[in-house]
Every structure is written in structure tokens, then in C-alpha cells.
Figure 1 (cartoon, helix red, strand yellow):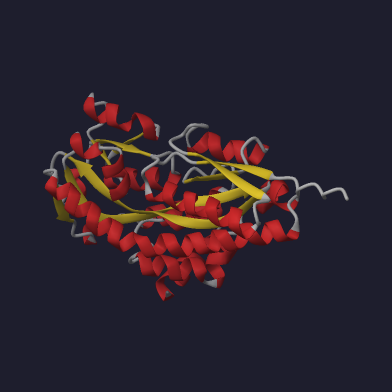
Figure 2: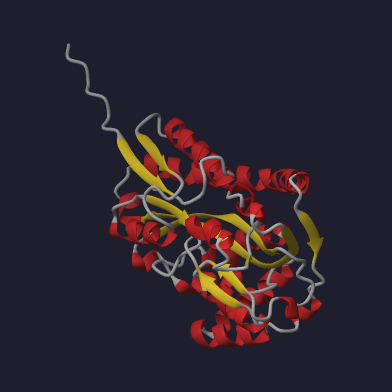
Length: 308
């Protein structure tokens, strides 16, 4: 009697720009293991960390074109620029507020953006709240006036820095350390884990905690590639993604506490910013993007974020 051939194995290429030691990569390793288990080995996820397949923008483009199956990152112009609505300054009070919003009806609507362009959102993993880092304390907006500061190419961050009087420079993630070291820029506005993982603390030794903007590591898949999977394989992807988001959120508090202790042990000075004067300056950012994305979207998100 002839044996039935084994089911064809599907390999999905997953790319991101975070380091192999990052929580993002650990989450993707969990996801890959879960997908293999849930699909009974019919779907294998190959992970390409550390910008091996390009920085965040090229990853998004690659997923849209089908050259990469799954991607993560904050550069989402190719997916839908309106996703940046969640990066409006001082929109969220803290991580619990963010997660309640993401799981709400309005949060789920946001995560369906991009489907018309061929992207299926698997989730939103915290890239986290962003801080100010330079070689002095940032205590007031005037401390940022005229300072060259590296930012990602996020239009909301660029507009916010303009309001603060800073001179924003959109430098690729992998070039930030050198840019600080050579004084191309004098400051960064990092999420704490990136600040540590990328050793930026060595060349910008003062971290001012402001939580001025929350950003997502958007996690997305080529929709045609997903649609081509069997129903069981699709269910394996969806369940594994949901479980990974839950796991990732559960790790955040401990990671941040441990990271702060490590930074302090390495000689980093960490201070907390009184944000009131900064909050007073950002209404023009909301007005700008209400015109660009529609006032209903901005007001609805703002109301839902405040209610969660």
C-alpha cells in the first residue's frame, strides 16, 4: 500500500528591524513556534531580524509587493498613513489605556486600515512611549528649541518636534548611534528599550521620561498570501498572533523596570518631565492631522482613548 505524501509545507518570511535580543524578536520566535504547533507543521515562519531584509519602510513595501510575507515596524505610509493617528502627542495616559483602546471597537476599526492596499493587520505590538535623550535634562520645551534631534520618518513626530522648536532629522534606525557619536544630531526621542538595546545611552547619557507619544510596532501580513492559506492555516496564524500579543503585553512592565535599573547602573541619569507645558503646545498638531485625515477620525480616536 502506498503511503500518502505529506502535506506541502508553506514557508512564510517574516522581517523586522529590531535586534535579535529584543522583546520583539522573542515575540516573533514565540509566534513562529506557535504557528508550527497550531498548523501541525504545515506552516513554517522564517524570521529575519535586525533589518536583514531592509529597514522598516522597505519591509512595508516588500510585504505590499509580496516579496516578504509578514512584517513589523512603525513606517506605515505604504499601508495607510492614517494609522499614525495613534501617535498623536499625549493621546494615551499609559500602557493599560493603550491596550484597552486597541481591543475596543474603535481600536479594531483602526487595525483594519490597509486591507484595500493588500495588508492584513495581525496586531499592534507596543513600540512604546517615547522619551527625550541627550546629554542634559529636558525639563521644558525651551530645552529642545534649536536642538537637532533624530526622529523616525513619522509625520506626527516631525510635526510635534516642530511645535517644540526642535530641528528634526529623519535618520535610519541603524545609523543613529553614529549620528549621535559624530554630533550630526545632539538628541534622540527613543523608546526606552531601543535606547538600551542599541546602546544609544553611551552617546546620549541623560534620559528624560516624558511619554510624549506612543507608537506601535504594526504587525502585518500580505493579504493575498494569507488568503491563499487553508482555513486551518489561517486559524493557526490568527490564534498564534492573538496569543503572542497577549504574551508581549504581559512582559512589558518587567522589561521596562529591568531596563531602567540596567541603564541607571550604566551611569544614565533618568529624570521625569513635567509635561504640562509640552501638552499646551500640541493642539496645532491635532489641527494639522484633522485636516489631513478627517476631523471625525481624530475626534473619534481622541474620545475613545480618553474613555478607556
